[in-house]
Image (cartoon, rainbow, N blue to C red; front, top):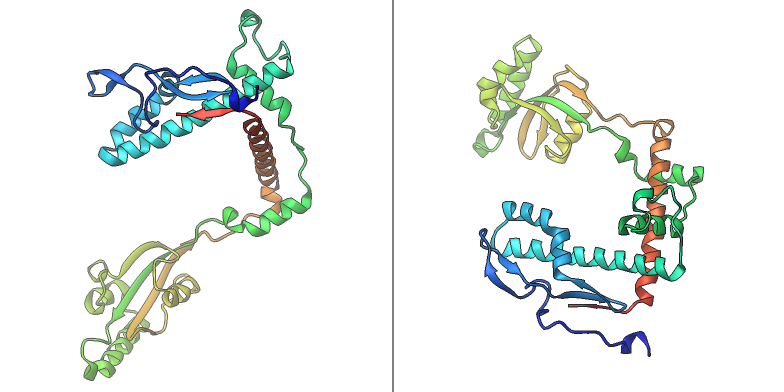
Amino acid sequence: MSNFMRPFVAVLLAVGALAQGPICNVASAEGEPTVVDGIAAVVNGEVITYSQVRALTAPQERLLRQQYTGDELAKKMTELRQLAVKDLIDRRLVIQAFKKESYEIPDHIVDQRIHQIIQEASVVGAMRSKNVKTNSIVSPTKIDEYYRKHRDEFTSKEQIKLRMIMVSGHKDTASAPAQKELAEEVLGKLASGAEFEQMAQTYSEDSTKDNGGDWGWIDRKTLAEPLEKFAFNMPVGRISNIFDYAGNYYILKVEDKHGGSTKSLTEVRADIEKKLVQEDAQQIQERWIASLRQKAYIKMY
């Protein structure tokens, strides 16, 4: 008889999809129904019950109830329980593969005191170790390629400490030249030694006026792109010339900057190698589990 024809016992209490959950009959103190039980999935004739799913998800469910309500909570709970069912199915497939192969776990993996009762966690770990073989040495070419493609991962965030004076050129079309002259007058005062903070409080027209034009520490993409490029290329302590952008006139001062440096390949080579080995192991494990699924009869309720 093929796997698809193998009969299985249908428990009457198993109803609906996992999103609705199993049949219940008593309300708990928290207002949640008391779970009776039901079938969540069948894996090659072995049943996974709702109670097993709930036992696995219970800690995360308590956290979800603290963070979400209503439809959003229901959606999150459904996603959590579906992931739990998938995990339990994968574990069951691994245990079945273990039994089929009659694989023996070395004594150093299983504690002598529980030698007669093999814990599933040990079985799963041992089977994964046996079937997920990776090469612990990554070629230099792969490491170099990863470094070139992911330089951002090894580059510290670039920030500047900025002050800005903005003189609007849009107050009145007829007075635009006068506004440009005002900006030039402010720049002249700064060149003569006037305090930038005081000039900003007196003449600036942006939202930081009262703070003396202080924008604090800013990242890239905080300002409009032309202003950002101009500001991040300025040397520390220098007051800019007038920067004309979108009809307004800007005078900038970068008080400090940090970040933006990239670690060398030598510094990060070991970390990249470790990451690539882990990714390789994950891919091999996923292919192995996928092959077990293809050979198995799995029915989810």
